[in-house]
Image (cartoon, rainbow, N blue to C red; front, top):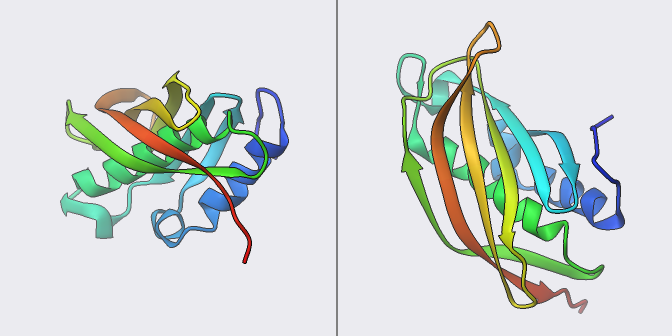
Length: 148
């Protein structure tokens, strides 16, 4: 069971929607916690995502942060709505070395059409020691889902 700060239909929807995405599956992403306006996601450091032995390539960091931040923003949407990234930047602060990475997403400013969200990404070593290795800031476009 995924720890939830406060389970809502949107937190459950976000978990299902994110984990169904091929990139999330490729990264072996998992939710560690989720609640209104916040997420914590993690993924193992896999050799196929490293550009040097044991050092994660920036693409995986960006993707994990994107899922965490935009997922956090999605938890605040009304039922029947979804969101997607329209703009983002990542600042790499330290090499991502360790056995897994953790991204903690949060909402900076929710909105009806656009939401600003952020995530901090930590590399975690075998002893559980965390090192901040990246920070991500972006904008998510919120939209009403339609059925055809």
